[in-house]
Length: 376
Image (cartoon, rainbow, N blue to C red; front, side, top):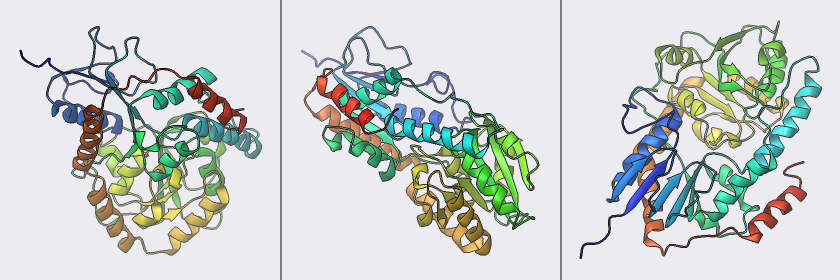
């Protein structure tokens, strides 16, 4: 009698990826992560399917980014999480909301990124219940989970994703000095938009020839209002990753500013770094900026970013740029992503199916984190 065929399903964003569409022209990180995970799963044999909606038949393996548990428990489940622990992220956003309202009393600051307790709980519970969580991020991202999960830390595996160096590459000599780019995708508190506004206002007064390019769409912080009348600011608007216009903007800058409060790994930051922009970033952005020739910034601290801006314009960017581009190319290729994901998923498939059920301890751990101040 033949062995039963293994059923594998990848539940990711239908809007960003589908095996039936050619994703080559879409260089957004979420699209490429889904595409390469799909290729990895195809290497395990069996029958693979894709889609946000789950098939009705039983599954041997579900790989999903959705924080909602399926009605029918799969044999094994791998959860793909992109970001710091949701409780930690929520606390930082709410603290930033207070700081921004105090620093910019006449500027609109909304609560559009605040999440409810059930939303945060679902993400926490998925990490607790999955056989393995592939955490898109580095050791700083991983550390945000350490004190909040009463489970084996080995079940949460950091996974650095890649960059298409053939698309995102250094253009060589910059046409303009003292140019910074802030590619936030959207101008929100979590990505430090309020920090950029405060630091740049103080910095440009000492360096009137400096130039800041803002790439992104409106978010929960009105950065346009905060920087109204401030010198050297160009609000370029939303962009398409990897487009000619996007690459042209990155090619004009020597430095990329990214004082994020919480990320997995910031794709827009990596794209700029691959194009030779030196990072002025928090470690919470998913990278150690100093290892790439840049400057580390304390999260939520405009004075720290201002000091980094001062240090950047005082340094020669050329030799640092070589280090940055070389390291991105060596450490952030998609081949490394596939190998790490394949190894982690293979370990899950080699284990006895655990079928983790909801536990009272999951909820107690969540309530304990709340009492420690992670959510107010």
